[in-house]
Length: 258
View 1: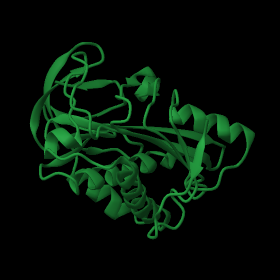
View 2: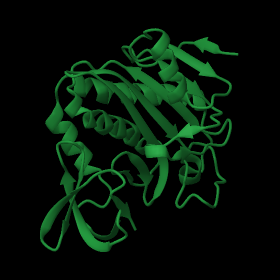
View 3: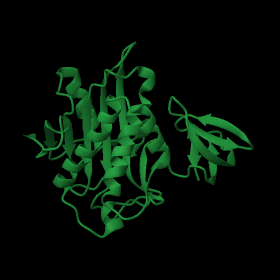
View 4: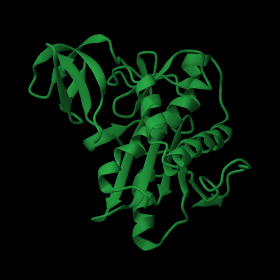
């Protein structure tokens, strides 16, 4: 059974004005994909559930979430103003929006771990999965999937470093209120992108990038460990790491933080 309603947002233009909230879904991104094959949802439509049974992560990974404890949602967008080669900008503004939302909830430092995990200090509290449909000249549609640990306090031992808003602040949160706030902050950053404020978006992303300009240990996809310093992000979203005086670009899954 689908519960269909609208977010009680007075300060958004379009994100979350149409909300499909389910008691349970396998994946909000999967439902959004299915919806896009059958119809044309309004720009900013939100697919939401508080019990996701088969959440998706980056490149085949999964997102675990305890029922009725966390926020899992997907936002459908039509960023026709972006070229296919500019799709990493959607990652930047989504990560910035989620980071700012979390920073408003906790007193600790909140970082973006490249490309789009959100960390409270050294622990992960949110993951993002963005799926784009491209044409030769533009991005036809985008699904922005966000998983956010809110009131969950027990996690699988298989997860290396999870945390939640409740563990970080000792507060219990109203999920509906947080969802509305998250959508409002995301929209603010997305509108900056639509307005072409690329330099300020890029600089803010770098300002909050986890481990930037710090010597740290990494492992490449071929199993080689090395010490390096994150210096920035390339135009197409690769991580730029300085090692032995040389700058090298890494694709997603080509480098692992240690």
